[in-house]
Image (cartoon, rainbow, N blue to C red):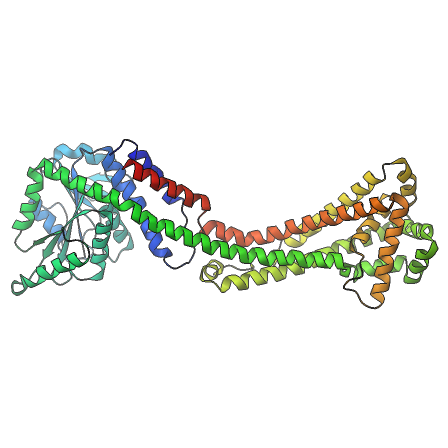
Length: 547
């Protein structure tokens, strides 16, 4: 094995951790389990073992509740190192038996770096109890693990973690339970990880001494484990002989370690490919959900744009304020020949009656805010409805409140943006009025008056209006156009209105994008990033090159 295998494995572990698979898509739970198993095996076995190839071989004694793991361990070492009894679960903490001269290997981080150690006395749950014994030879250690089917979730998780850290498994089962589902989940995991495996078949009745072991071997064959040893108890001799062979033969121990290492490394690409495939599924599901949100808010943007361009924004308070100051008849007469008079009327609006200016500005602000709010409400409702039609989206929205409505912060944010837009319009007017020709004419109306007129010119089109509204809106549009042309010229007016309109559209788009970001945030947490998938793919290639 090449020297760059260790950094390649560390990179793979880190990249696996970075792959989020929390979207509810078919196969996600299995993929998460595979990802977590890979991370545990790299952390708890591959990296420590490859860093210290001369460390003692670690055999984990595992199995179901009441299978006799602790009794077997005590019998093999000739003393009580692991408590056995009728209360379940009996093994609440791992017990590690080894020769005293191997203590240095197990005091530190050789195995399960994250678990604390205890020597003597009663160790607390989750702590590895060290049990030095002269009954075991140097170079071989036995670890009694909690029950794989313990009623305690922490015990089950710890059992799986310990099995992932082993050079080999001594898996204990009984004639009554060897076909149970839970043990076979672990046996298949051993197969998938490439772990060396021996089974101890305990409590076999005399009249089933041939039938049960033969059936177990057939099951192992069918499950892709033909090389697994089957050691039949109550006679302890087969297990003792198996252990003595390992104890007396350093080469046999090294071969067992190499076999498990080779199997683990060989299994990595296929198992990681499961995670890769799941990441692709998650990315696809996330893209579909993002597309639903993007489409809903893009439609909202188009709705706002249509409202702004159509003239419908002039309904209600804006139209009333304009009509109050100018009047329909006066507007139409001014269009015929009295643009100067109309300009004077506007001047009185913005200079002689300061309150009217504020009222018109406020009316414009409220009207824009209302249009944006209504469009955002519809977009939120459309997005939530579309997401609930998909399994992944429905799971993300579960327990969430308020996402089918516009956010509470939209109204103040819109008001702030409209005020900022109004300030931009006034700045544009000032810039256009900087020439000597325009300065004098602008003075007759004022920057505020011209700015308000530009704002009305942005909205005042007759589309979407009916009856008398058409007359007033049409008059407003024409009057605004003529007044501004009298000050700046027709080309400058078109540029002013265009810049003002585009600036407002950009602000509306920003507001709606912020609203859509509430949905994006859910996906950002649950779905993998495209880059994490690419990094994982690269890490796998590095493993293939280094192994």
